[in-house]
Length: 294
Picture 1 (cartoon, rainbow, N blue to C red):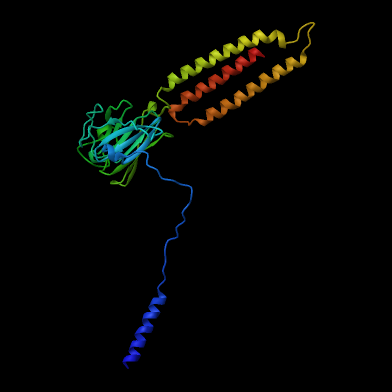
Picture 2: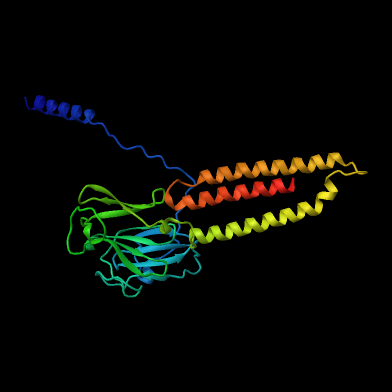
């Protein structure tokens, strides 16, 4: 009887063992990727919590010390020059110069096309802006209270847990307000969404000046070479005249297509309207120059 019971227990054990299926996730390791250290923050007592590319440098956030740094990009492994962009190194809430500003362990930031840094200072319940020179200011939020109120300046309130994202297509910041389960938008100033360190009007001014000088040079060359390519009495290089005109016509057509493509490459948002209209005017000037030469 005991032997039969032992045999039954053994059979049940083997049955349960056979019913167990060993399953695991399939791992596919793709070749061709290599990890290398380009910056060791431990040596400088910098803890790089987040990083964003800003034109010719990198903005690095040390959240534990509430400090923003910049590193030259691309990073040279031989020597890395670290500059403090903003943050005194102590937690708090103070706007002002780079060495005086205080943050409260922020964990999210974004960079616009002008190089301004927008900080989601969650524990202070505000969104702050660091200019290229490192001066810090508050753009929206209320330090003294949390909430979900929309509006300008201190009227707007946030929870203690939110992140920020810069969206150039609409010239705005998107706020993922986790604590309130909201997706919110902060409209920026048009100049904050312009390309490069110069303003759009300044860049357009030099662009138009360069085009005008090019057009003037083309007219002078066209007038100087006209006697040699336009047929007159006793001289019949007619094929040369046709070749010259054909070349200019093709050049004008190519310029028209290029201008059309460039204008359409810009968004229709307000920061780009002036630039698009200027391109349109430049194309008209170019065609007028071509007609004068022809």
